[in-house]
Structures are given as structure tokens and as C-alpha cells.
Length: 354
Ligand code: ADP
Ligand code: MG
Image (cartoon, rainbow, N blue to C red; front, side, top):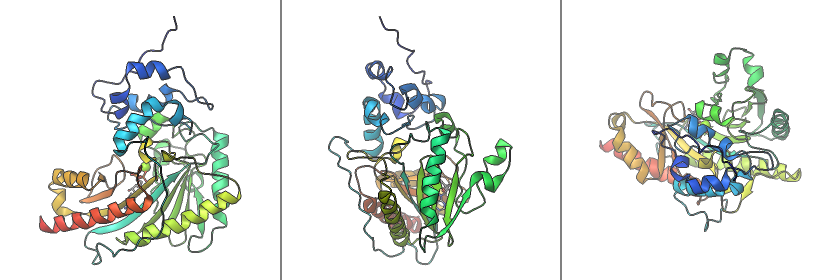
């Protein structure tokens, strides 16, 4: 008889999707498996087990994790993105959008930020990557960005060089730029994403600060377009142009982003699969601030999610909400952007009426 390691010990108050879908049968089927890079089911579940308030509770260590452990990833992904993956054929659409600024008088929106998460094939993801591979990823991306043309031209700052501190507390501070690149939170810590921090982490930022690339944060890269207004269309169109340049340059070197037709771009956290796109605004809503449940309900109907002012799992400060598309899989980048635009228009209208 083969002895199984004990069933993962999720605490009674754990709310994660991984806990919800991990049956004994799935556990027995997956517990002895290992990807080519050596990632196991226990590695995937560690963050969810150590953090009962984790909503997803599972990370991928490499592209193969999604195939090998699909018995658990599939139901989690389908529930999170409200999408059937069997019938899903992901298509990218980054063609330009054209709609007016939803807040032309700058009454509500402080900034718009649209990012995509991308990982290079042939490297493990951040929960598993070795320090040598992390360095290679940093080199590939910084070399590419060194030659990028205006308006994206800019500079790379490594977290290590910027900070130069040794104390862990100080290392957790954002690097001194507008990017707010920080050491990962406790969910990412448990997943192994913070290993060797701050080695080979850094931010490339354009001279005008409107385009940046985070290297080796939660994914190999986060490509970001940002502006201090509500002009969602121009923020999206800028990101699309930059991504096109990055993809073509990588293509010349025969380097691809990790991709599967049914799951789209592959990412460390399943919540980012598909487009990898989070299109969001920082928006000040003083009336909704006093009635947050109403905003939560409206956001859900509009397929939007709400985060705190400093990012995921932080508090809303001075009534500034981070509102963004919640679904990234089963729709195109353009559709993510449209969801944000339509949702923000509706929320501004409701805030005025409250
Ligand atoms: P991501 O989905 O990119 O991982 P996080 O919630 O981790 O986003 O936040 C990353 C950082 O980006 C945080 O410092 C957050 O305050 C900042 N941020 C998010 N949205 C906006 C926005 N619309 N404008 C300015 N900064 C933003
Ligand atoms: Mg984040």
C-alpha cells in the first residue's frame, strides 16, 4: 500500500477556492506528481494553507503546473473567471479603443493604470524560479528595453541599487518612483515569490513616467501604462503600442510569452490568466465611501472589483478606491477595457445621484 502525505491542512475559517474544490479524490490523483521543474501540489497550495483569508489559495510554479494539476486548477479558474475553460479559445485584441474621458472635469478619477502580466516560456514562474534564471529574465528584459524608442524610452532602476538598505523592513518600502513596486505581501511570501528579495527585481520607467515594466515581481514582467487622469482610452492605446514593440522584439530573439489556447497568457496566480490585464482607476467617491456595500454590489454587477488605495488587500484611504475589471479570462484585452469604461461611467453617475 502506498502511503499518502497528509491531506492539506486548510484551517476551518479558510475561504479559498482551492480548499473548496480540493476533494480527496483530486488530492490522491495529484499528490505524487511533480512538474519537470519539480513543482508539487503542496508547493501550489502552500500560500492558501498558510493564509486562511486567501481567496484563491493556489499558485502555479511553471507553465506545466496548469496541465499536470488541472484537476484542481480548472474548477478554481472557472469559478474565479466565471468562464468554462473547455470551450474557451483565448484571442488577443489590442486594437485601439476610442471613447471620451469619463471624467473630463477631473472631479473623481485621480489616475488610470492598465497592466498586463506576462511570463517567458522556458523559465519557471516566480514561486519557483532559481536566482540564476531570475537574473536571466532581468537581463533579457532590460536589454530589450534599453533600445526601446520614444515615447517609451526610459531607464531601468534595480530595487537593490535604489534602496541599498540591508534591513528587511526598509527593503519592503516602495522604490522611489511613481511605480510603487514593493516586496510581495504575505500571500506572495508564502508562495515563494519573495525569495532572494530584492535580487534581480526592478522597474523600467519611461522618461514621462507613463509607461513602466516591473521585472520579477509576481510575474516575470508586468507591463504598465498609467496617467494622472481618467483618459482610459489613451492609457489602453499606449499599452497596446508598447506591448506590440515588446512582443516583436522578443519574437526576433525567438522568445515567447507562456500561452495556452484555453487559458491565454499563463501567470503565477490563476486570477491573472487570459489577458493578464487589470485595467483600473483610482477614483475618489466620498458618498459611496459611506455606503461601501452598495458600491460592492454595483461593482459585482458591472464585473468590476474593488481594491484599497495601496493595492490588493489594503484599505481604502480618503475615499480613493481602486476599481478594475475582475475577469481576465474568456474575453479580449479590448473587452476588459470596455468593461472598465462602461463601469466607471455608471459608478460616476450613481455617485452623483447618492
Ligand atoms: P496589480 O494588479 O498590478 O498587482 P496591486 O493591487 O498589486 O496591482 O497594486 C500595485 C500598485 O499599483 C499599488 O501600489 C497600487 O496602489 C498601484 N495602483 C493600482 N491602480 C492604480 C491606479 N489606477 N493609479 C495609480 N496607482 C495604482
Ligand atoms: Mg500586485
